[in-house]
Image (tube, rainbow, N blue to C red; front, side, top):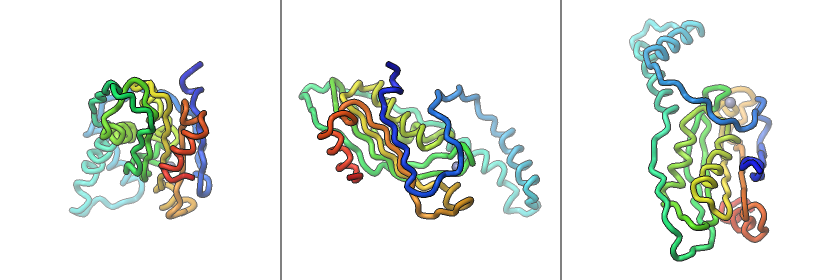
Length: 215
Ligand code: ZN
């Protein structure tokens, strides 16, 4: 069975519909290198096309700043995914809650941000606690949709740790929903990916959802 098929994905839009079609998770196309000069010139073209007068001093450096800002937002920080042997056979859930994150919606290039709750039921290996936050940040630094970000974090944990279960819940507000379109300010979108015993064992599932405040 393919790994992706083992996940129980629930995409629950708490608020009104996002308004964009969602395409299923796909492997990220190999990212080409960032050409800052070309990006800055494209931002200048965009501003011109939008009828913005770039004559003022304040806007002079904007194309360059925007290019560098997007380059930063789209460059994942490398991290060292050190794992440890679970020598003491810890067999309860390890959960990090309310990890703040922000990412860029690939439909509008606008940010979505919120919190991630990430947990796993250890098998043979444990992960350093700070790494749960690192992995969220890592997969946030690219063009994303919240659903794919959720499953990428879960898949990474599954493949890196081979745990007995994984649970990932993301709650986020999307600027493309709150600032424009339906202007549903304050609404949050909730996504989750549960696998293994976190999905299949009622007690573990209930415990995880209770720990992340979803039940
Ligand atoms: Zn969007």
